[in-house]
Image (cartoon, rainbow, N blue to C red; front, side, top):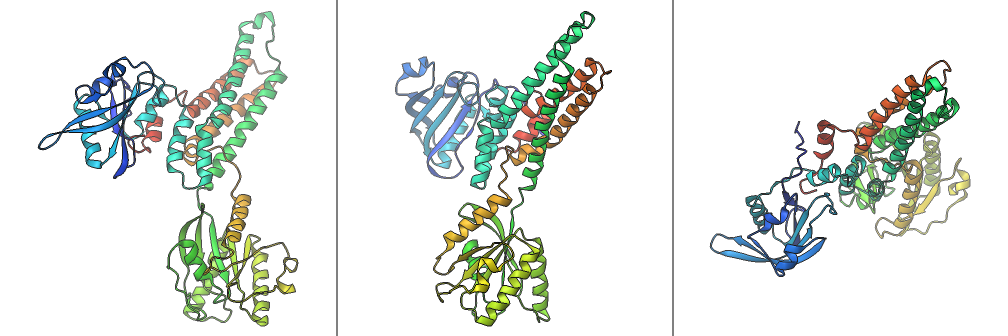
Amino acid sequence: MNVIDLSVDQPIAALASPPGGSARGIVRISGKQIQNVLAGWFKPQDVDAWNSAKSASSHPGMVHLNGQTRQMKIPVQVLLWPNRRSYTGQPLIELHLPGSPCLLEAVLNEAYRHGARHARPGEFTLRAFLAGKLDLLQAEAVLGVIDAHDQAELETALAQLAGGISANLSSLRRDLLELLADLEAGLDFVEEDIEFVSRKDVIDRLTQSRQFVDGLVRQAVERMQSRVRPQVVLAGLPNAGKSTLFNKLAGSNSALVSTDRGTTRDFLTRAVNWNGLTFDLIDTAGWEDDARGIAADAQQQRITQLNRADLVIWCTSASLSETERAIDDELLMTQQNKSSSIIRLITKSDLVPLTLTSNETKESISSPLDTVRISAVSEAGLIGLEDALRQHFGKSHGRSSQWLGMTSARCRETLELLTNALERSERAARVPTVGDELIAVDLRDALDHLGVILGVIYTDDILDRVFSKFCIGK
């Protein structure tokens, strides 16, 4: 385990833009007396403005770098925050220049030669936390924004970064501190029989606080569980267009496509990110009742995948005969009896203009189904499928959570300890013979756990677990 160096005086430097070539690259430097780090090799156009800068300002100029054969002069734009009003809460410089990896490496080496050291992962955000610019929840949200895989994760991270959950927990902490102050004030005047807060008020405030934290514990558990992508299984009769749809959504030709029935003899799985929807897509063998040998194994695998599915996309070919439609309806109804999470697709709609029979209407199914007509080849109807998927995921996975996954993992145990402390304090308050001093003991314990979540109370171990997950330069 790395030991976090909490010293923030020495300047640190790192590449703040993505690695690789680009039109512009950014080198970030933070610490005390950072203008000295650039002394001698950065030549500002306006020297007086550079030397007298008291607030955030931009300074064009040239950096002088020693090449193998001659000195190089590179145009650069230097953004300077000379005071605490920066991201890190200390003087900070960003050098914006052409994004050549070799050039950026040369600039970093020059900064190291002039007193800066190489920044560790997350050290810029760590300094922002230590300076009080961010609390620990918001610091984790910075990483959440960087690592977000879809729009929902990004919105959760941005909400946490904006301080939504922090504000609620800080408000809870203030309420508990005020309650503790009332209890301890009463203890100071116990002989005068002065009551600063009634026992009923104590119970009510503790109950409200515990209920609020209980909700956060449930959210933390749900957030950790929801990190698993939903399982979406394609099912239906043979030659229903499942493999063609699989290839379209997966963005590959992994599934073998043929007009022959029973081409798929195994199941295929791909992690899909389709138009911002993230899920595991599974293509199964077509439905056959009298299958033997390898085909029988494929049917068993199909049953296993259907039993695990969060959502079944039932593919019905528009070219089915009347007999095949009846079989398809019957199998669909059988599957619906096992799972209510089904979307029905009428596939190959570009080949045959299908008029739904009475057996295919929603009224003939025991509960309403989303029915969408598509052609995976011409892409007709895919918008309807996307809308149906968004509606389903919105119902089954859309419970709003204020917690990022990594925050849930870090805080879940502490939240439970906080809940236990509030429960003990509440139980003590409900016993008339118990004195306020015993209620205050458990209340102080609750405040300590709340301080750990917010980062008011922290250890090197906690900071190491949080900031070691960052990349360098953030």
